[in-house]
Each structure stands twice: as C-alpha cells, then as structure tokens.
Image 1: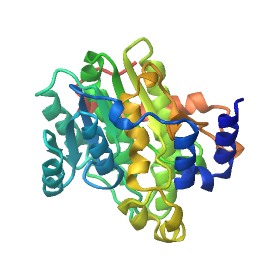
Image 2: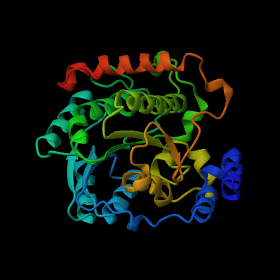
Image 3: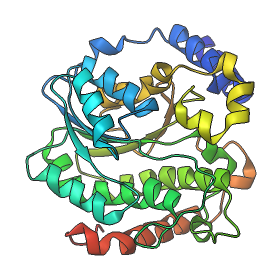
Image 4: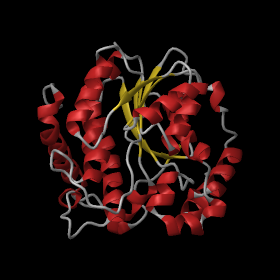
Length: 323
C-alpha cells in the first residue's frame, strides 16, 4: 500500500475526518484530482431527480458546467423554473416521486422525447420525522428512496442501454453504515416509525439494489453505482438533523464538495464498466464498517428486496420483469 492510500485509510477509520470537509480536502490533494471541467459531458443527456435544492441543485450546476444537457426533476414547477433559468439549455419535469404513478408518468414523458439517456442521477429523498403513507400505501421514505428509484431505472433502462455508456448514480449516505439490510423493516408501522432509522435503512437498501442491478445487468453497457456525499451543509441536513448540523457546522462540507463525486461518476473515463460500487471522494469504499450490519444470508436478502421492488412496480412499469 502506497503512502497516499495509507493516509486515506487512516482518514476512513476516523469517520469524522473522512466524512467532513477535512477528508474532502485531504483526498483532493492526495490524489491530485482532475478538475471537473476537464471531464466533459458535451452531447450527453443527464436526468437528475431532486434537482432544485441541496446536493441535487449543486450537482446540476456542476454537470451543466461539464457540458451536459440536463433534465431537472423536482416536485415544484416554480422551483424547477428558477433552476432552469440559471442553467441555460436545461429542461424540467415536475413529479412527486413518492407516488409510483407520478414516477411512471414522469418516465413516460421523458422517454417520449428521447432515444437515449446517458446518465441517470437518483438524488430525490429526505430524512423526515413524520410518518406518511403514499397514495399507493407505502411509507414515504421507502417509496421515494427505494421503490421510485427502482421504477425509474426499470422504465428508463431501454434508453440507458441505447447509450454507449449508460450510467446510473444513486446518491446514498453514510447513514447506511448504521443499519443492516432488513427487508421486513423497510415498511414500519406508524407506532414503530423512526425517521433516522427509516432513512438509514433505505440507504442500505439503495446500496444493496445497486449490487443486485449489477449482477442482473452483467454483459450490458449499463452500470449502477452508489455514492456517499459526506456530511454536507444542505437544507436537508439542517432540517432532518438540526442538532447534528449545528454541532458540526465548522467542518461540514459545502454542497459543491458533497456533489463532486456525483459529477465525477457521471463523466470520469476510469469509471466506465465499473458497477455495484459505493463511492466517497472519487474512490470505491467498503459497504460495511461494523460486523453487526453484515448478514450471512446477504445475497438471499437482496433477492427478497428485489422481488419486493419488482412486485410493487409491476403494474406501473409497462415492461416485463427484469430477470
């Protein structure tokens, strides 16, 4: 192991040093990162969800600077219009992604005007302390951050396959390190609901599904990776974890620092063909930090999660099951 990786590994073990701006600044210097504006996306189309604020908004700015044509997705058309005005050449699609019906309609509207999709960035979601059921009867965190994402990949897969190098980037979180994959816990009752646990469990599920997609898409040109933005100072962090946000305010990453790896994953040539990985600061990282989150039957539990997602989205997909 060379000296740079020794330092990086030491940062990784500290957690705070790794996830804050300290880790970002150290790794950027350690590895002499290629500037994002040298990683071009000219002529490529990127659809990004949750694009009107926080990491999604910052990622959109970075991707536009790389030359991408953007399709911005969010709930509020007013906010989308403001973002679109600041990102010339972009387009917008409004949808509430907690609803599978709206998610399906969004994908259909996009596919009606496109032959290919180069990059799909799945960023929409939030940590909420209020228990909510969606129109289809699913807990909202699970619906938005797992089922809706699964449905979008499923419906847009033909467009991704039509691209030379179709990439799916899922914005996960280090919160997933707190939970093991447990399909039965993804749909809590109102009495048992804990916003932090629900969020962390869905983030673990996102990582598991990326691994499952990778196996099922083997031999295609489509890759599915997840990433951890680190602890970034965003509206979502301030509202979801206000005490945590205040305590770590001096060392939180900026939204731009948090979004850097999203833009890098979209364009970096060295990522082509790599799939099922979990990235932080432009490098693949372990998906477990503690023994308690590992399962001996991990593969079987991933298969259960896949079956749940497939069954939940079958009536909205308009496609045969993904084998």
